[in-house]
Length: 237
Image 1 (cartoon, rainbow, N blue to C red):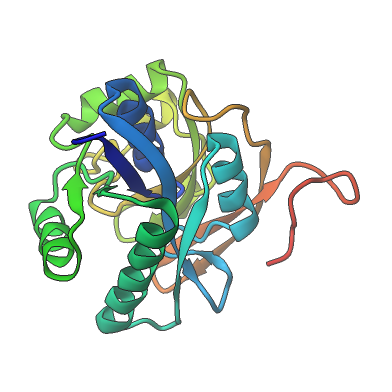
Image 2 (cartoon, rainbow, N blue to C red):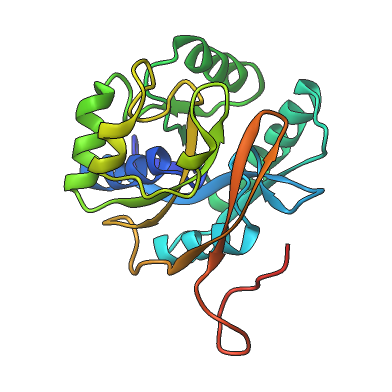
């Protein structure tokens, strides 16, 4: 159909990309046909968030969408990142026939400009920003009231105490955030894992594992809340 969008959604495993999926489906201007995630090859975890690949794959299954992985070395230069993204986008064009790439960015204009520039330079794909410029206090309430559930997987220790890692993203947490911390963590103060909401066919049952501090961040290892052999999720690192 002329003008019909086939959308690949940049998927961090967090609440903003999950809510972007919900809004894109509500808008009905195209079809989200896949999710794009970056994966740290050394640790087999979502880059920056530190979420296990098994949980990322569980999200894709619950969303009913194929997952395109951009594998990243560790450490990773910007050149290596861009190369991995270009290859992943080309794979999505060839296998899914995508025409657009959507991002869950909220208000960081430099990040948006970077994404727009790279897509224009290297692809014929058009960018979409479904949650752009929604005031973040309003967006946080919309997500919670809309049934999205998420847990904090990572905090920047220069902005938040380690005790915030592993906490539920809820009204109580929003009220306890220090002054100057964005309620959606858009400045990198914290990162989340979305485990339930209208974008999923079923919740993903998780529990908190060990919390570790590394390179100025505190990561809580989120685990599937089940045990082998009945657990459908792999619990390997």
